[in-house]
Image (cartoon, protein in one colour):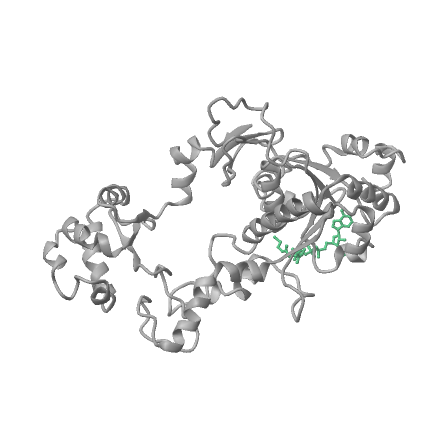
Length: 424
Ligand SMILES: CC(C)(COP(=O)(O)OP(=O)(O)OC[C@H]1O[C@@H](n2cnc3c(N)ncnc32)[C@H](O)[C@@H]1OP(=O)(O)O)[C@@H](O)C(=O)NCCC(=O)NCCS
């Protein structure tokens, strides 16, 4: 168990009610997009009941395994703080139990392929008939329209939401980003939708249908590229490093994407991640020019103003890089921050997992798991002042079958019989 976030003075762990205490989530999610959403809800205090296919569970339990026979890190890092019940919702008893779960819960979240729950008889109309207070949240690849019947994974959403065409270098292929903006990006969008529906229910007493399409979530995160698409009508995008412009936003390498120019600059000793990203805000130019040993450029008409620098950004950043190359990325971070220059060393995954400040805040956390021992995970990035998150291990498959059946008042066949019949 690990505590994510610093406990506020006077708040004793365990005694404080969590923000979402009392909210029950029926979690039919799998892979990443849905589980990333329900894990945040669990961290905020909701009771998340994960429903999984008997025998196999969420397919990620067995994917990319690092240890034989043990739930993968893929699964354990996306399903902390949840409970697990196995249930075959295609069987008669499974459907009856599922109906009881719908009655019991405040939110149903799923990210199956298009039409899966409808085919099992659980349409939105049927679900709200069973429980008018429940909200039904679905993540799909696409919204209604030409693509609606298509399945989607992370990179499909990145491809179709504007990310891949704008990521990479002008002479290279479309490139996917390491951030899981299609999956976890959709998950966090869905968290917002679910919280809004829960808040509205406090006035109306009724749940609602909440949908997030992965394509739309990526498009939302690519908003600035759509800004630039429209700016293209008025000429080239000067802050881009590209020499040629067509009628669509090109891949722009490491250009900053904002109003202030930036670049990734090499540092010593020259390893693959020995770079620092430096942004040149107008007010810091004088200090930066002096810091890099070129004080004459403060007044030089070719460098003195943002407009003048924009004409030859390569050279401007070349001047700064001549200095950064003589320092490590951490030295550059310290020296540039001392004169208020926004910058960021490129941190590798190894740097991050070993970062003491992230560990101290619980953003990198060690968790005890009954089968795999200790594993490291990424903490909850949403920090509430009174209710720090306690991260507990993901559940084993079907770990909570009997306790959940009891809680929902199931009085049909017992767990052993249901298991023998393939229902549990
Ligand atoms: C991710 C995705 C491509 C995976 O596709 P998939 O492995 O073929 O899985 P699907 O969700 O389409 O289907 C799952 C099947 O398992 C069945 N299943 C899953 N859990 C079950 C349960 N507890 N009981 C009975 N059946 C179950 C479903 O009923 C479905 O069967 P059907 O096609 O006969 O109706 C697809 O789910 C998808 O497009 N999801 C929406 C977008 C998304 O979230 N993508 C990102 C995932 S990180």
